[in-house]
Image 1 (cartoon, rainbow, N blue to C red):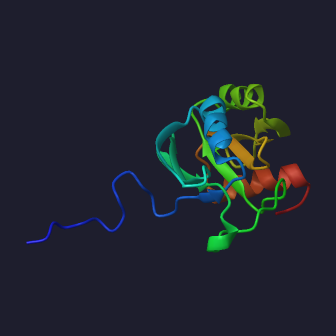
Image 2: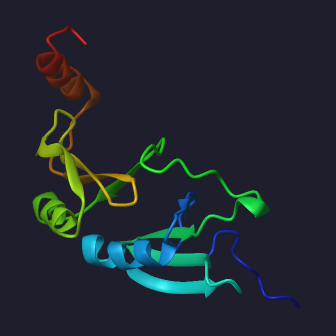
Image 3: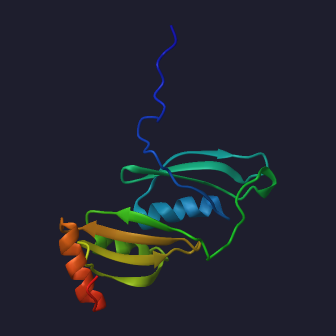
Length: 156
């Protein structure tokens, strides 16, 4: 009898980002320095480019590869990615400082936000924006709306 296989492998979530990164090997080293990422595996191609890299940051996986447009990979829009990688950490201030020390540019300073997170943005040397956050308060929707109205000067 065949062994039962889980449709979502152990350690994965339903959504796992899979990026196309020019300089995937350098990106892997950067992720280790900036976010304490752990490399779980890589698959080099015959031409030296990386066909696949898998890393873990906290309890989440991130996959990426060098660009392979000849195989239908996404086009590279360096520095203009239409996404933000959101990273929850135990200490946003410490993680933010580590990311900046590793070469990220602070693009939105950390501050306590109306929705209950300490939150800010950095842009990494590869053009990706990372939201770094620590959840500090559990709020009701009504509490968030009231705080939002106070921040933006409206009734929400």
